[in-house]
Image (cartoon, rainbow, N blue to C red; front, side, top):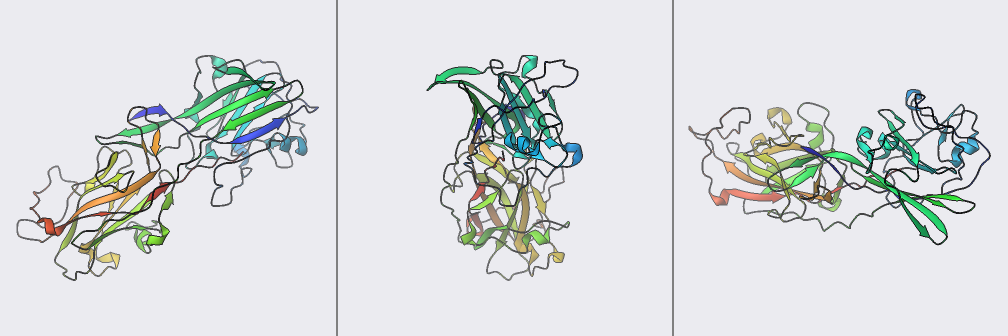
Amino acid sequence: MALFKCLFGVVLICSISAQKYWREPLVPQKQQQQQLLSSFQKPQQELKVPPPAAPFDKCDLGEIEKIQCGSPDITVDQCQEINCCFDGRQCYYGKAVTVQCTRDGQFVVVVAREATLPPLDVSSISLLESNNDVCQPVDGSSAFVIFQFPVVACGTTLKNDDGHVVYENHMASSYEVGVGPKGSITRDSHFELLFQCRYTGTSVEALVMEVNPVPPPVSVAAAGPLRVELRLGNGQCFSKGCNEAYSSFYNPSDYPVTKVLKEPVYVEVRILGRSDPNIFLNLEHCWATSTPNPEGLPQWDLLVDGCPYQDDRYQTTVIPVDTFSGLEYPSHYKRFVSRMFTFVAPETYTPQKDTVFIHCSTAVCYPSSANSCVQQCHRQRRAAVEKVPSSQRVLVSSGEVILSKMATES
């Protein structure tokens, strides 16, 4: 595993003008810096990503998580004008990405852990040029990280644009990448934040840019001569056998299915139209691709010889299917759970594909004195597998699973 930088964007456009109050510096007390005079105007925000499916209140924070925004005597109107939250007693930063530009030439950037889904590791966020101490976070916690630095420092670029003096900088998070023989993936949230301060004679503006998602391809499923089906459960796992997760399944009309990074994907493979209780369904190999083509690249292994791929940090979990499952023929079923990921480019390790298709090569096994047909994953040496006629093998694939784009509140 290795840590690399990658992209995520958020679009918001803010206009900021002078207000008659002081804003305290966002630096630790141990750093004796001069108190900064700041002035802001209410941000004009334009989000270009879908809002979260569930209601999201960026101001819903516990008392211990709240970090002061502005001076202690700030009013509720002033607090809202600089895009912060007010609880009747204090002004504080919300669970979002907040970019502010001060009148005296300072960037203030606050990133919340819950600004993305799944949450970010805020300790992994840094400016792309951060060799100088002034470019390091000035404050933070497990829930927030705060940067405050001069607009002329930390790799900021300067340009003129239609009468504006524009200062531009960006930051990114680090994330873990799993590198396999046929592809590479990540399950961590990842983003790059590009932001600007635009100065004229009387106003200051902040600008943050975002990249829009690429439209997904059409969903597809494959089948073979032996009737075997791969389907995805749409429940949740609450018990050891995860029966609740497989109590209902996505219909063909539900695809593409949307998941967020690290969210469980419940997979079931079953034999159709057979009533012989003495046959067993075995999974020889299960893997994921970014396209409907099971032979396409990149690929990421999920199961190898029916067992979790050992080089995956978040290993696939095989769910035992036994008589307690309530199924008439438990040996006709295989179930496993994988965590949602996204493919990354092999050279740069930047996110490349937001779609995942799951494929499994299956075989029907007939028990004998030499082969019990039970796939063992915890022995140091697995029992030999009997050759299975090609007519008893089949490749099955899922419909399309799309990585949900993380919307950032501001």
